[in-house]
Length: 395
Image (cartoon, rainbow, N blue to C red; front, side, top):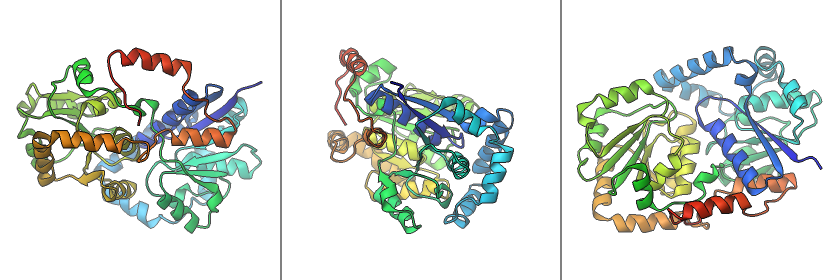
């Protein structure tokens, strides 16, 4: 019998949409190896010449004119993409999308970005007979996510479900699954042993992430961060912003044994486990990964729109605060004076009663009629090998 096939479409606007697609694919495959998953950034796949130019323009707009991005988000908040827009997208950018689907023959299509969701919706209206799920990758629901042809929405919270049902979508078509995170974030490792593995000092540690494009914050906060470098270790993870990384490495202020400056890292899960505090932009994926690891978070420079909503959600939940110099000083004092209490707080946050990072993959498998089969032999072997070096706590 042919294995079930799940095709996940995303786009590279930021890093979270595609990250969510890969996270869900890996979770599905781990929980049920009889399901095949394929992730494609659809526009880049179909139009590799034009797509990088469009993404570059988007990146520059977000970096230089965040208020414009926020204004566009808010003015179009309750509006779906029009049929004319979908037609234009298809003609200009996605002409061969149906051919990709015909070749791969998926049993289910999951879109983690509004644009491919709109394109596939148009194809369904014209006769495509494959179930379409839309996975909303933030803690808000912009109108561009909504399409009449979607068979099911997978959302982060009951509040997002309420937003969709308020737009006339049947509650039966909306499942609260949480945002998926990669299985690497499903478990926590021993902090002391991880610090040794990563070449870090075994002292209070702060992970500072600049987002996928490495955007950073101002001088006042930087002074607060570096004021206690002798006692608190700082790990700067700057993503793909090589220019900023080189500038920081050349800064004499940051030439200290307790300061590590990194570029893109595929080991964010380990860096979160090795750290005690996370400073980051409130992207949907990073917030959810931080929640899965139970690490306290401080947010800076939320992009107006969905990141503001993400920030609001986690602050209201008590899992994060908005960054400024006073907040940095407060948390650094807590790290030095109340370390054991913070560790206990983090342990409680990763209990299954508070958050279960497997939920999204489990829900998709159940809806597909291929329920999770438990821990696979491969996972058992990996856990056994890693447990020789680290003690794991099930989230």
